[in-house]
Length: 253
Image (cartoon, rainbow, N blue to C red; front, side, top):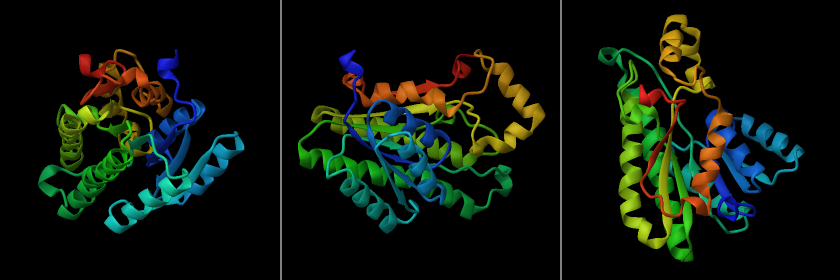
């Protein structure tokens, strides 16, 4: 069981104020990790207070990851808050906007690509430099999607960004695996979070999705915990460039 022991590790989790990022951050802290929660939301401090109230070690950093200077500040501040050490990063920040493709506003396309893909690359690059300079092993966990594998509907920018995250994960793993840096991604399926509220409210669409999930339920942020802890641990040391679905079997249908 020592393979899965991550107690005492230090991590950054983006998009951690709510949704998947919050669930993953919680899972890491339950496993004994000290976490810097990074999010644009004002709820970040509330999340920190809640977690600290449960006895967890964590810090909050508010930042707009679409702004490069804000992103760099958030990374530097997080590392400082963690005592200068870093073992794990989870790039979970993401946004979603839905329009018919022929009417999809270009500004929405740009904002989604900025957060879902560009920010992921920049943070991977920063943490990669950190690990290489420290001459230390480290874990990079990106959040892809089942839409990394297929196109979805009315979400061309999101599908493109998550396809990009999958390919970026593979590309970085090719260069960094030999340095002891594991770069992998989790691909959540349909998860009951704020991001999916529109399709959850659409009775027909929600029923169609549910009918395809062998587990017979939508996922929750809690369902992401085990896979994240696995990829953050030594149990995954020989796993590189993997895109692991966490989808209740959706991809198997």
